[in-house]
Figure 1 (cartoon, one colour):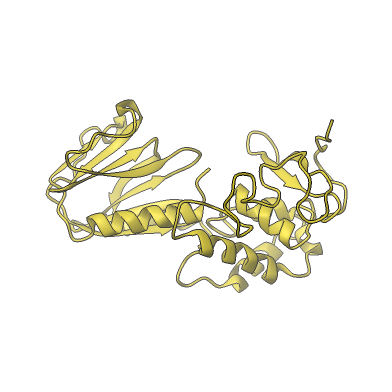
Figure 2: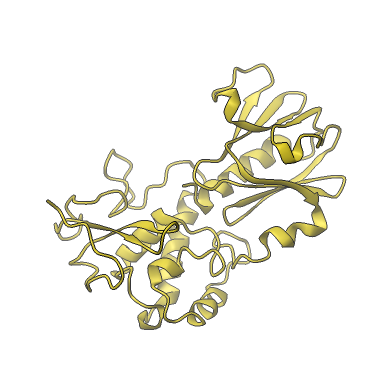
Length: 271
């Protein structure tokens, strides 16, 4: 799933390509927006908010999209062949020399800009936002003290932008078991700062290495390394679903570096 750093970079690339430019042709390939158009409008800004993206136009309207599991924005030259199948394209925006393609996007809406808060106002502080302040997130988390920390990091109402990759890696780095209740985590500030540091370091490129290494199989400590040796101690990495269906998320942790038996989900032990 695209995480906050991926959305941040997509917004940056779209801003560089479209900001201050007029849309010469637009095509919305969704039933709810079948008759919508931004043709002739100038792009004022493209803003990431957690995992959401807001594209603002000069007629006081905003195009909102959410990446969810597989969404993306692609940029092409005006005469380039598309690198994605046409049936996956939800939005086409053309300037005189560029084409922006919204691919497999979700929750696509075109709303008056003053209604943006109705779409993103429920979110917690954006971990990659300019006004990032972990103190606000800590207060929100302490209000749900019985929630497992692995779930708290994924709750976008508490902190926006963190996804499954970075919550697994940050918990490993801080030696915290994902099933630890928030009230038992003594160093929430340090945990949030680790997640922020990892994401901030990766936001300028598409790769999401957390170890400082980019070789195959070397990018992460525990994420997607189930049953492989822990890079810190050699113990096999455990895997379990955390959360209730259909919102459960696959969780990776080292039983030695992140001790305590999971409280709500049975681990998938190595064969």
